[in-house]
Length: 363
Image 1: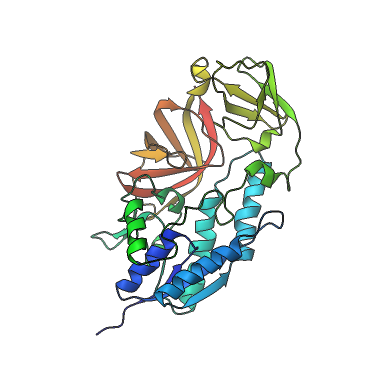
Image 2: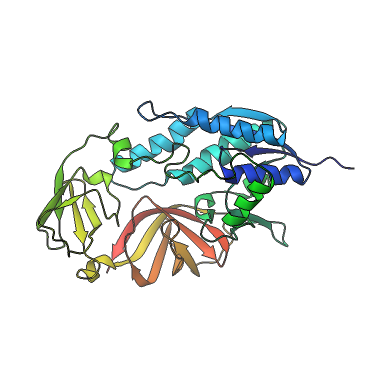
């Protein structure tokens, strides 16, 4: 019998990666569990050791080898420093995208291949499908509520040729049942939330260790001062909390941020019902750093769909080239679009790729 390929499986200590490891072992692959150790701030509770122990217990249960890979340098420079830099400039980054690009499918994949692995595998909810032309396509997961293709849109053909997503065809409840079937110690463990690897953390508290808190005014759409905030750079377009509105009665609507001015350290808030024209007003985006999963083989302009934030419904749009990069035009005006976030494009369930939102044009 031919020997099954060697697969390094990223095990985080959670149920998804645990089931991914168990499934590959059951299928006969030569698997090794690998825990990725990343940089962790000294002012937050240190729980990576417990996560590592959890991953070790899973590997011990399945009787597979276990390794720890040090990714501290790459995580700090490519994910954390990028995040701080973007927030300092008034933009809203997405660290999960860069974590996948530079850590999980960057240093991890590189080291795995150097150590003799044929593939890496993760517990991502996504599908890697080889088409009839021999190219790899990144598809949404079967479980649309858990789909993570948005965070994986920077993957290229070389990376996908060495990548397996074992749970992409499964729903979360199915993953839980499979974990119980394999008698995994993570079967009932709650899902991790928050910043990639670091976990659930208040972003303003985290950033305040690197960016000075500077009180400022909250404005309404008429330019009137209606409250206060802790620093314009900390807020995301569409955010509904973290600022104070004076003289707010119990029957007042929930306001959310529609714009921010770093120079004057102000944020502007609106009520979705009363200030409709201020809220649904973005008709065009400029995109930089555009990456296509299958390479740029498309003919522009193209009608496609886009997500302008994670877990958002896909929106119909036209993607076209411009002198500076690419532009996205909406037939129906959109709201709560943050510069620095990613616009990720789809053809049905297939993720075409994406880029960084640089500029929004208003009606």
